[in-house]
Length: 241
Image 1 (tube, helix red, strand yellow):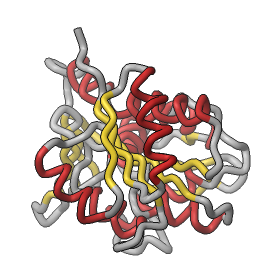
Image 2 (cartoon, one colour):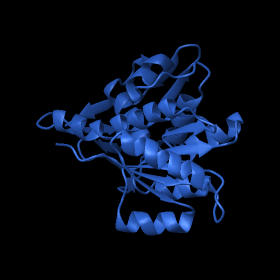
Image 3 (cartoon, rainbow, N blue to C red):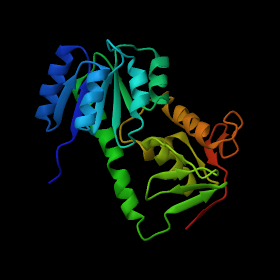
Image 4 (cartoon, rainbow, N blue to C red):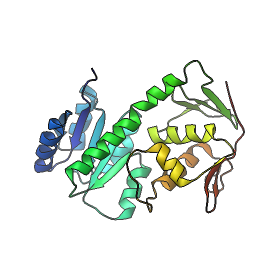
């Protein structure tokens, strides 16, 4: 039997903490709550959760800074809770490594669906690696090495480059579809389970983040090319071993 996923709520609004603890607890999750960034750090040192619901407005630290800090744990899901509705805040949240976001006030069922989606995206990556066991699972492109089984990217200089879960999934998708155009809908379908807003810029943000990590000049990319009106093309010659 699978153990129930552990969720940590980081929010200084006790009413929201109590509500989420009751609601998500009834849904079978193990839920803990903390009120600020320092409490969060102490908690994850003792008991690493599977997913964090992170409020942006905390008394001791900016939530976006915490999200960026948490990305050293690629297996950890992060959903930002924000009372701010501006698109720029949502985009910045994705840029610093959050897996998803939801604005307050939120519908409990929508939040639950978002949680299910993020956890499904995190857990199966290991399953995908198992599927490749015994097959060619190491990709080489432009002097880079991507180990699909070990979830590891090595630069031409021989250094490991950290990728978030979605960055890894996107790069894996690109190398396995080398020199084939992928449109936004294909990428969204492969990356996520939830329904996406057609105006959602999350794919553009994710591609931009990945370019910063693997392109010599992210503003003039040669590996991940934008095909105007169509999508993206991974132009590097790729071979597997």
